[in-house]
Image (cartoon, rainbow, N blue to C red; front, top):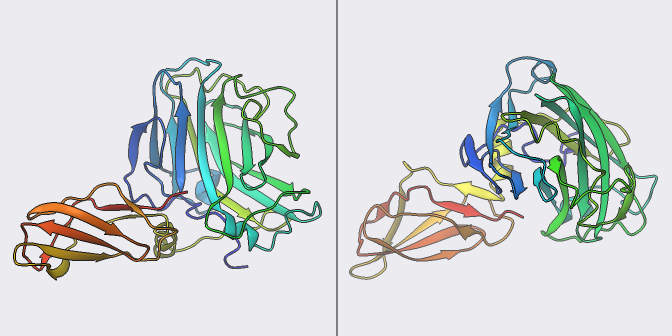
Length: 321
């Protein structure tokens, strides 16, 4: 039963970027999970939460992805959601016969909301432009949610490293993107203006309302099995396929490129999903010149520095979907 969970970092252990951020959108704290919001009056606080009691704690979880709402209205164009994206080849080669309605996957997760209400999940298969949604009830106590999804005609996934399927936990979606004619528990054509039934506004209009999620597992099965716990080291290496942050105290070594400049090669710990982009890097000595990236390393061209080593500060390589 090993390697059955298609979700990386579902126990929210790894947070390379940091443990808290006030932001509208993007990957900011817990690896592989992102916040996506637009048109809000106030951005949400996102953090790697700590679990100290309750059902999720008893089940073995100690960390969560936690969102704290700002002071917001429930406007028609508001969007606030948590995202996770699965690489397409991980679905194509998972053993799920996705075009067969008798073949199933099961999504399970633990959730807690300071405002008890019904929330929605949308699963979006980009290669097939199909979507599947369902609703669930969250309470002020940790609750385990389990939902089984059947395959469907035309639901195909490319065997490549692109966007396969996004799982979106809606905290609030305004009526510009929802429609009560939306059909839950069935695959259908994706529509940006009909992603779920109209949502309750309670959580969205409550300042400092919180929403926490952990123990996310998607497996090829017609039922949920116990969560597949991995060591921190194993989860970190899986996360580093998509994002790597260097240590500010890590010394890297290279050699002189010419009489006045040096070239430093920074090996990445794992082969990344694709050629990464470097979001920030500062050389201790000299001026940072050209940066060359590939899936296996980052090369820094340092102008005015002939030392054999340097310490990059907050060097980041990202190959997120």
